[in-house]
Image (cartoon, rainbow, N blue to C red; front, side, top):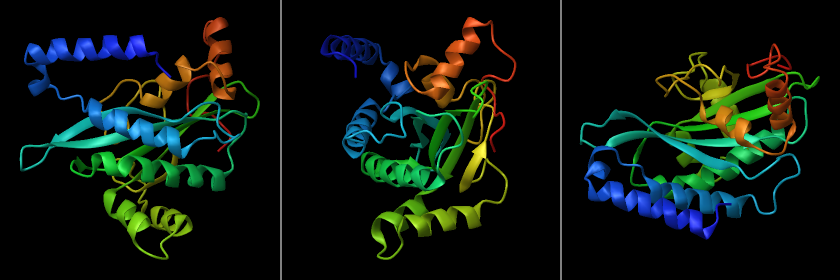
Amino acid sequence: MPSEDSDSLTEQMHDFLDGLGFADLTPDYREEREAANDAIDAAFDPLPEELAEDPDLAEINKVNVHDDGDDILVPVVTFLFEDAGEPDRDAVWSFVGRALEAVREPFADCHVRHYDLQFAYAHEEEDAVVYCRIAVHPPLVERYLTEPGFDIESLREAVAEGDNGDDEIPPVDWKPFDAESMGTGAYSGGQAAIAAHCAGASAGAAAACTGAAAGAGGAAGCGGAGGGM
């Protein structure tokens, strides 16, 4: 967690940019992000043993403009696993459910195209980082959070059934992707949020793999959507 001094400096920077009028040009949704991350912290306390550190609402991507003039957004939540090898899918979906419940309310008044959940873990031989993502659009999120009987298993089945193989169109069910060098779906290109999270982490099998690869000058296979699928 950032220190209070760090938070204060960040706020000063935002206030300075707001004073220049930049906020009107490039809204950063920092209030929504802070509220969502507070809710995520509460939802994942205590931290599940499968995860190396707290999940993070790492990005809020503006992907289009609505007819009413407001931004269309994709909130991105990132997860870093502790152990090498493909994670248990039941655990993955339990984390998806917690995260969706946490981030839905802060974005209730926004136009959300979908919620993007990105995951990183080390290949079982710990020689590559594997990146996967799940994308869920708001109608399914609303059903999950409001419809009696539509539980996490129902959500999981609906995402699987609705995935047409095109990762630009949600729902997307556990797709590996090249987070280091390309955008996916909502993104115009560059590094995906989970790659930055993994590279900056201090714990977890995926972070250890990234660190080992960097120390070796970038071992072949590290940083991509490697095996284990």
